[in-house]
Image (cartoon, rainbow, N blue to C red; front, side, top):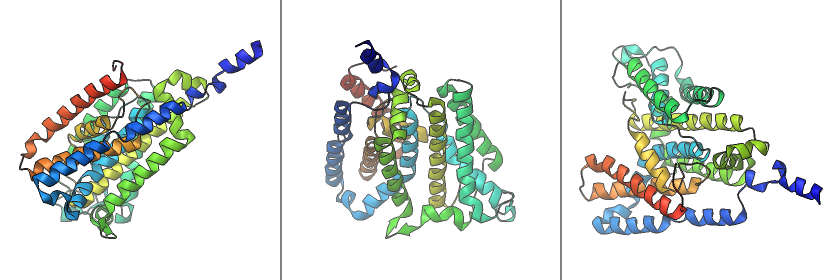
Length: 345
């Protein structure tokens, strides 16, 4: 009998450290669908406001306008599930394509901007490499040195924004090579490539976080990092990888935005973190870690951009967008507090 009790108490035999119980999974799946009625309601309201809302052109416009931010929402969701947050994603969103443009474009074509050090074929690898480096440096400070993630990424947000402003002189990089504009401007099967890429990445996210050991490790760390470590999960490595993947996704999203605009403004991504958090929170991703799903985050960003589109069709000035985002975050936090039944920390 003592042996039996000892085995049951061992970390390896504790299933909650690595995977949620079946009842929690069932509840999580139900919460995934929580925003579907709201999405349908907004679609009906949008059609009443302006029948153009449900036209194929407008639907594609909504999906394309949200595709870049949606990828950043996916990145933030990965980090939030581990119990951390990355404020620097919005700056990586601008800096990564900015660095690539700075290294590639010919200064003779852009009034002195650019170094013309790399061939244009290196554009995408350069963008992704910047994302990896930023994520790795965040991981060094947060994981290795144990610094507060919020403060570190807030500082990185400012540093990276200042770096982009410095290398661009506050101007916009233009005359981008086709290698930088292709993904953001081309269409596949009549639909913008950015939409396909966004859907593909969310599909991969749903698969990895919902059905693999790596995904369960992320939830375990966000739920209880000490229990996860006791269960044999290499928490430091998982956190580091999560930060790197998130930054790389933000860099890719910035590349898509730059391709669509055929330029990299010095302020690209500025303020985007508010939309990112609004979408993640209303999608059911907990700021405390360990809760939320990729599908829920997708419905959150879809609902947010549908609301913005309805307001635009109704003639509401775009200046009210930030007010909307902040209101949505506050309402979502209140609803989350009521449904969760416990205080948020």
